[in-house]
Image (cartoon, rainbow, N blue to C red):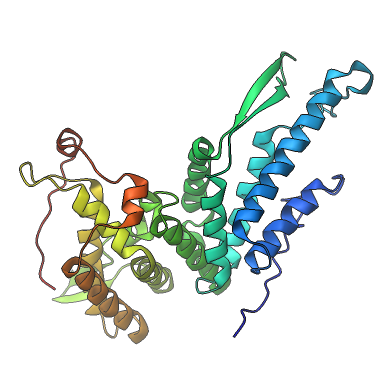
Length: 334
């Protein structure tokens, strides 16, 4: 059965300017077609890169001719820069990531597209320095520029998807969709998003229960915490194997220290165990989700083998790097 087409509404004023000359609309239509599986990811990556390169080159040529040189309302050179296009792409991907359901094939297309972008050749682009008016070169290199994308994603997780602001059902669903998107980026080896995963979310990391007269009492908002549990379950389902691979590759038997991923993995198990035992305090669905996720984690540990995604991300650490971390790997029973 074909997936239901999704209207991403990427012509939102926050994404596209009303006075654009057409390239932006073509740019965003490519993303729309990509998500609805009407555009091949490799072709989309090529077309997006071509739009950016061509527009920047035309803009510089226009600026180089004094007779066609113009300034914006702030007195800055009216030119296109690659970073401006990339910023628009990152913003559009945020909208896409939160709108496309976790189980929609459009998520696979989106991740494949980002993988294909990394394979695009680098381009040296001319540009204009905004403040001192000197020409400068800009290298469009998707591999390097993914650092900016990661910073953008980190900000979204910390601010836009802050747990205290995911109380409504609609916002909570967007958060779950976005978490699935981040998980797929890691699972495919496109980007190491483990540091901004729901497992690393400070809200989930807090022990939600405290002892009161011998009983456990939930101290946090139930709906908010249950959404965090669901996000963790989605993450483990989609990227649990790679996440655990990070733990194993970072573990050093001699020093018994590892990357923080091990601590995060074990802490997630502790929290899920508490949730699994919280019948009557949390919904039956959430408790069952926690139990099922623990079973998945147990199976991942028992059947562990190095992943190709781990190879792509270079998840091997030297003994010296491992000793810089002080997290202890603890064997835990389920």
